[in-house]
Amino acid sequence: MTIQNIGLMMTYNEVDIITEVMDNISKYFDKVLVLDGSNDGTTEIIRSYPCVVYLIHDNELFPKRKVHDGIRQFLLEKAQEMFPIDGWFTILHGDEMFVDNPNEIAERAEKSGAEIVNWHPLNFFLHTSEKGKVIDLNIPIQEQVLHYSPGGLEVRQFKNKKKIFYNINETGKVYPYGIKERALFDYPILKHYVIRGPQQFEMKDKLWTKTIKDEHGDKKIFYDQINGFSKQVRVYDGSFNEFEPKNRPSFIIQYLNWHKYRKIDWGIFKPVAQLISKLIPWKGNHVSK
Image 1 (tube, rainbow, N blue to C red):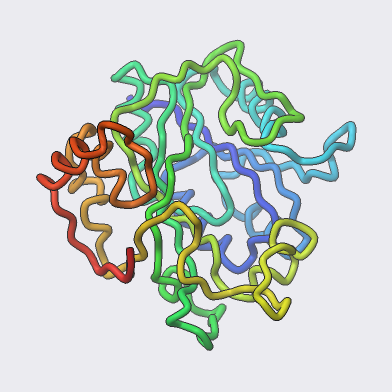
Image 2 (cartoon, helix red, strand yellow):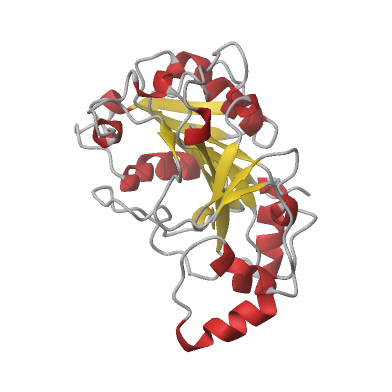
């Protein structure tokens, strides 16, 4: 019997990519609950998918409140009211697509006794080598934005059980209280389309994108690197190589390899980590370190 896996989704103005995202989500989920704050057509696209069993707009929340990560409490309560309290929850975003199968990962986590799963986002963006590139909205974003950096780990799945809850005023905690920090020994991957063109910013200037400016005060679209802690930029060539579901080495090697992708202070264990990680060389189209 397939384990229950309910999607909890928060979105805001992702109309340029939301169809691709929902096509991906609908392959894996038949129960998705959505909290949406969009006014660009994203809402209507999401509603059209049969897997969406509940959708509330943030202006329908009562009492009115600022939207933090903890606002997922509204979705959590509704999901546990609508469906049995068992299985798993998966956190969904309007600009992320799974490479690993989240249902298979939830089943593995359940069998292992884990209560959370750390996913490894591969952060896609427009590279400075592509300056002048124009995004065609009639072509999938995935076919046009090909540069990515291996990112940090983020919890994207947690066990569905009684007496778990979010602090609705809290930002930065994506899974609820009452969940044990017992993680699956694997890092499944997803694609996160962080920067994908000027169309992305047209409806978001009042939020975080307001601060993304170049030296002339214009919106910054092209980057050498998407964040300060990453050490690599790659070009997707049809494979994610050692990150692929069937290519990943043992968990301990994945962990020790981490210094290749992001800046980590291993302390006195740095020589040991580097020595062991050399046993598992990676292959890929690598732009920079």
